[in-house]
Length: 128
Length: 128
DNA sequence: TTGATTGCAAAGTGTTTGCAACTAG
DNA sequence: CTAGTTGCAAACACTTTGCAATCAA
Image (tube, rainbow over all chains, first blue to last red; front, side, top):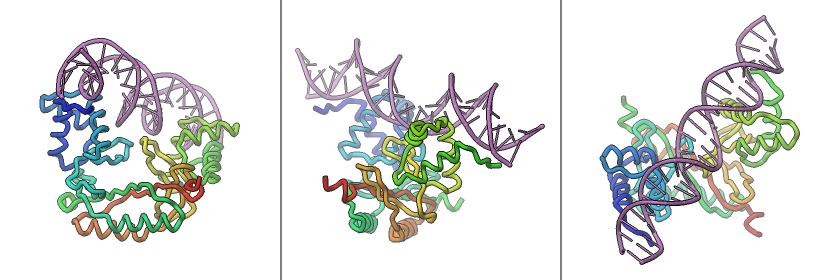
């Protein structure tokens, strides 16, 4: 069964306090800087587990890397991500879901999943 | 300037006749099977060029690999992809775009870009 | 001729796995 | 005690780069 370890707790702690999507390597670096060193492998393994448990969200970055974030809402949602400061906002997506369902039906598809992320500049970053 | 080479022509030819998204490696294998061998590096380089020229579309697969396809429509659009046979349908996305714009405005973001792909089973694959 | 293009090998990036040592329950 | 977890090193998958040879214009 699942065991609670120092490493797992520290990874979660970093995720809890970060409002942005971070890569496994970035999280690893943060832990290292904090003095609490955790193996990179362990970071990957725990992130994977957390994703499986639906505790953290994952999105694919442009270089194919996975980026993780512990989101506030535990229901399905999407993100609006600032490409400059990386900050992200969780957005309501009922309209998107409706579009996805309708589109799938229209083409005889049984929808299984979808990805959707919006990228742009947040107010702060846009004005400087 | 840009030069027209045998390699570039053959890569485009394979893309023209494929209704599915394919990875660079898959395209490379197809070329090799056809007898017209082209270096993997060259495949990557030409695909990159074609994407820059907006001749082919690219989406990120789940393992972080890029998948390419030459789409019929040359305007912005999205895809409905069958996870079983890989076939994809180009779908109209005005509703999605509207949602993206509205959502961005609502949060003070200047929208730059967005990704959105729908995954599911096509009629044929669902019924067997 | 000559600069763009090719293709090999090597390097790079992000992630996963094998396995012995460690540790929470 | 003992099964889950860790962490290193090595393996992996995909992509890019260095560079000399080649080729289109």
